Image 1 (cartoon, rainbow, N blue to C red):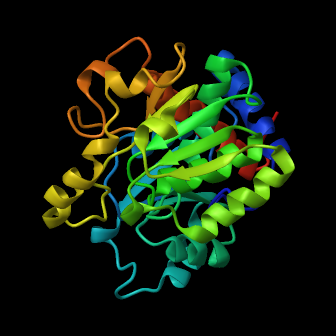
Image 2: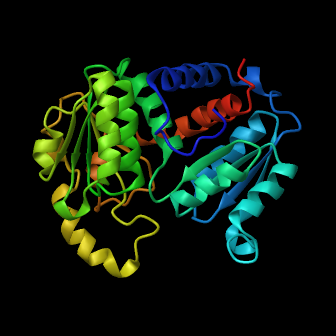
Length: 308
């Protein structure tokens, strides 16, 4: 696979192979310290970031390579220079490109014109690196995928929900999305997930009631109600729409007793979840955050054909 732009083209064997490799890297990181000597990653950021930037930069450093940070505000991308030309020129300098952009079609154009691998660090539609890391974390905590149920509550029309639908349906995790009718996942992505579920045997539910969605869940997942592309003037309207889907201790009671809580971060206590939930023993959000580093090393090494 030349690039990672979404999980649409991935299968169960590919994801399980990456999880196994990420686990191997996590156990013995010192074995990979010189793997990418003299290799350079260009990191293009149209959206702000903490975890994506730091985890990718640290990953390249620990693998013996180098990462260059490029803010699109400081580049001609999209104004004086096309995305295609940026991809072609950058491929002459760098060995791999990671981009965090607004539009999915822009990351696709970047990948289609680059002669080096391109990694989607996040778009409005998909966040594949996050969900691959999340699946790694779930496997660490639960030891399996089959027989598990993950429930996402909140904004159904966002990159995390879309990528969870794809990832869970590929590996065989049942997924239930609890969201308002006005904020449902994009139907074509739901259909792609249902196609996956025909092979994996997972169940997919899109519900408009948080308690029903969370019932008997092994994993409860929340994400920001105000994604980066959402205008600030919509904040009050969205708080009103999503408050019935807040993950609090009362809602967690509808999940299994040993259920874990996940949030890809950043998280706002008192909004998508209460402080009592995110700071509880059930919360594994910082294990999630750490595993971005290990999984992204595995992704980089796979795309550069450096797996060992």
